[in-house]
Length: 118
Ligand SMILES: Nc1ncnc2c1ncn2[C@@H]1O[C@H](COP(=O)(O)OP(=O)(O)OP(=O)(O)O)[C@@H](O)[C@H]1O
Image (cartoon, rainbow, N blue to C red):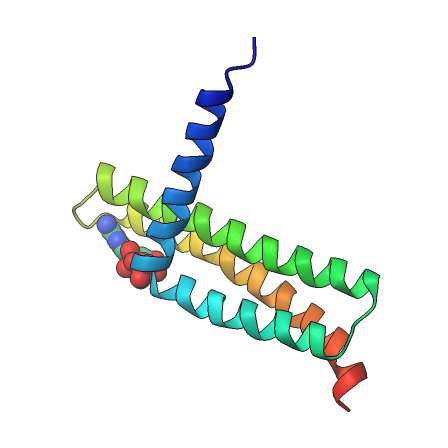
């Protein structure tokens, strides 16, 4: 049987995680500013439906990677609070995932907005 209450609680915890990201992670605030700017520009230029899909995909990818990266950082800090080369490597790899997503988002933004701006 589907337990609606349990389901709602899961969403509550997910929102808590998102709030934590926005309050404590500086990178997330940069992502938020970029997201608001990109959404505002997309609305202003009245971009096409397919372009909206690319923009939304890029935004989703960056936020998802940032959340996973932050979760990995927390796991590493919890399991290995002291300096350890393996801990550093794990964090660097997770950070690289965010970088790849951010580069993808940048490329999508340039391809779409250069048509409207120049
Ligand atoms: N326990 C550790 N052992 C070895 N190197 C570490 C360790 N913790 C962090 N580092 C190195 O420092 C870098 C920055 O780690 P840090 O945890 O400060 O992440 P951050 O990217 O600055 O994120 P945030 O600002 O969100 O905490 C890591 O990518 C890694 O190279």
